[in-house]
Figure 1: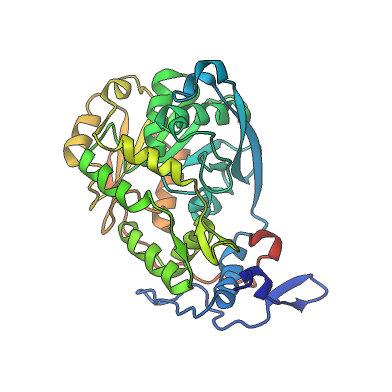
Figure 2: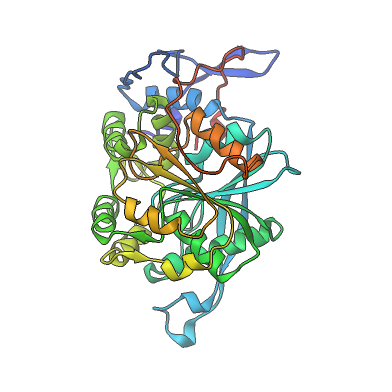
Length: 387
C-alpha cells in the first residue's frame, strides 16, 4: 500500500488567501453539535487524512513546534558499562502557545501521552498564558534514549528540570497528568524553587500497583493499524476513561499519537516500545512518594476523575492534610481527564489567575460539545504539518 500522504490531494479553496482544502470532504461539520457525539465512519486512509486535515487544522498557526537538546547524564545510565558511559544529547520536542511574555505553564502527560494531548487546553489558555507542552523522551516527536534501562521516573524528572532551565529557569507552574505529575512531585522535592504552583491531573503520591500493572500490559506492545477502523477502535477503547468528549477530540489524539509507516503498511504509535517496557518492569509494585509529597510546599490544584482507579479517596484525604490544595472533581471520568472540556479549562484558568479565590472543593460539570469554530472559516492544515 502506498503512503497515505501520497493519496491526499490538496485543491485550492481561495487562491487569494492561500487557503487549501482536501479535494473530497465528506463531512464539514467536523465537531458534532449533538449532546451525544456521533461516531465517524472512515473507510480508508485517504479519508482519514482528509479528516485529520480538518481536526489538526483547527490549531494550525496557534503554536510553534520547538526542540531543545536534553543531555542524558551518566548517572542515569545504569546498564551501561562504566568505561563506556558518556553524557549524550537527545532532542526533546515541545509546542509553545500564547504570549511569550505571559505567565508560563508547562504541561506534561502520562506514560503513553504526547504533547498534543493538551491542544484544546493550551488553545483555551493561550490568551492569558504562555503554555509549553512537552513530549517525553521516547514519545511523540522527541528522540529516543540509547538503552531501555535509561527510561524511568528519575530520567523524566531530570528531563523536566532541564526543560525548565531551557525555558529560563522558573519559578513557573507545572501541570502533570499521571506520570507527569509523579515527575513534578519528585522535581519539587529535589529542586525547590523551580516550580511555584502545581496542577496534578488525577495523580497523587500513591498509585496502586495493580492499576499500574494493568495499564502496563495494555501499552507495552507494538501495534500496527492497517485500517482507520482498527486505529479508531483501539484508541476509543483505551480512551474510555476520558469522559464524554467528542469523537473529534479523540481523533486529534489518534492522529498525533501515531504516524504512517511505509515499512509496516499502516500507522504505528509515535513511541519507543522500550520506554513502555521499562514502565512495565517498574509497575510491578505501587508507586509511593509520600516523603517527596511532604516537601511539596506550593499551592496545588488536584484534578480528580470520579471514576479513577489511580487516585483513590484515601490518597486524596491524606494529600489534603496541611496542604494548600484545591480539589476539582470531574464526573463520569476515569484516570487523567483529557482537559479538553471548556468548563474544566475555565476552572483551571480561574485557579491560575486567582488561586486564593479558587480554593476549596468543587465538581466541574461537563460543558456542551464545542461548536465548529463559530464565526470563523474552518481551518485546514497544510501537508507540512500532517507528518
